[in-house]
Amino acid sequence: MNIGLIDFENNGLDLYVRVVNLENDKDTLIRFRKDTEINNVGTSDNFDFNAYLNRVSERVNKLPIGQLVIEKDNIPVGQMGLGITDHEGIEIGYIDLLYLIPDYRGKGLGKVLIRYADKFFRAMNISEYHLRVSSNNKIAINLYSLSGMVKIKEEYVENEKYPVWRMRKVL
Figure 1 (spheres, rainbow, N blue to C red):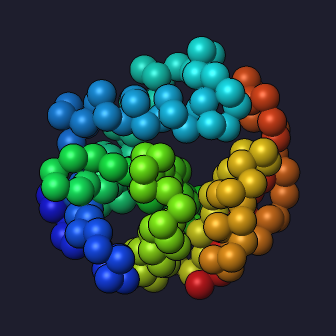
Figure 2 (figure 1 turned 135 degrees about the vertical axis):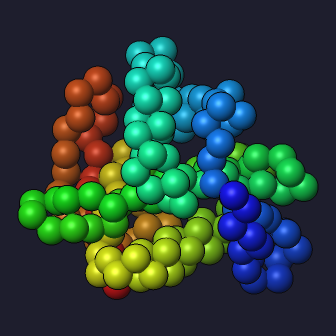
């Protein structure tokens, strides 16, 4: 399913968003996740990519319109995973992944994707959403903070080199 053109604020990038097709996008999803792991912890050697694809499959089955591939001229340049989950008895939105390939970073696109998430969750009648980010990913933490997200706690995830921050945005 093609969601359509995202308004990337006239910066000359006609990027489209479409729903993940797990069979066709498998290699792309692994490549993006591998890069994310390397950026966050310095290696992807200990990451279980089959388990990751199973999690994406579960997310696609639960909320297909939340698992997205971002494309430029039909070439994947990013990925976004949006879901709805229960957290401490409250239904919240959750960003599983926000990823852009290196050539598309630092151009303000992350802010646009956060605004997309805001609109997505509002349309789903969700009043807050969370994400987790590696505590050493200062660029992402800065983006999320400038977008109105606040750190609510540090969490320690098995097999992670650094603690992760759980951040929240109230809509």
